[in-house]
Amino acid sequence: MDFEAMRAELIRHLSTEIRDERVLAAMARIPRERFVPPEEQYLAYEDRPLPIGFDQTISQPLIIALMTEALELTGNEKVLEVGTGSGYQAAILAELARLVITTERLPPLAEAAKRVLDSLGYTNIEVHLAKETLGWQSGAPYNAIMVTAGAPRVPADLLAQLAIGGRLVIPVGSRYVQELYKITKHRKKNIVQNLGGCRFVSLIGKDAWEEE
Image (cartoon, rainbow, N blue to C red; front, side, top):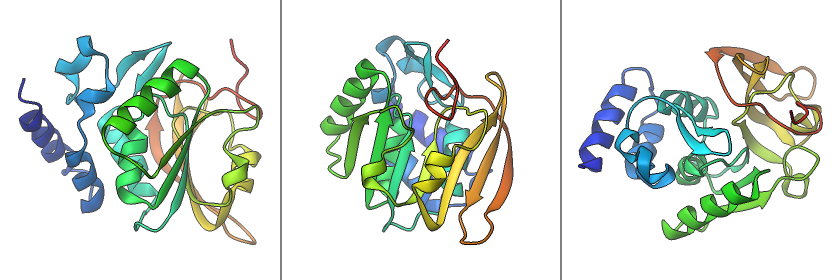
């Protein structure tokens, strides 16, 4: 399969809705096929989510691009990702920020993601097993936080780890359908923007959903 041609076609498709050229360029550099199971690689550049095992998915490329664009990264940020999954989103963030700290609650996914990210030469990504409290408090404050699982509310623990002026992008809603929110933190009152509907697996942890 000609993955490079397939990737180029996906980027052309995304460019009709994504305006941040740095986001598109980052996604054009990353081999998404490396982050999906071998039996799914022929679908790696379809604009759709794909299963990665353990009832988890690698998100639809358009949603990934929209969420990344909303963080408004310039290259100097320290970014927290909650929900490593395949590691694909962490790779995109690492192309656009100074440091990425990413947490994953499932050890097999964390280990697999770290192997792929290491093999691709990323040195500005830290992969950690998630603790009971959401996020990674020892690395706070963060200039940007991305949550790649749906929460019932905006977790206070994550807002506390966000720097003043920082952006948090998170799906909020039920276990089955959410709205994508962007929260910009200010000293007096945060700015909340609704970026539209989405569907993610459930965020598990304190101040989120309990494991079923």
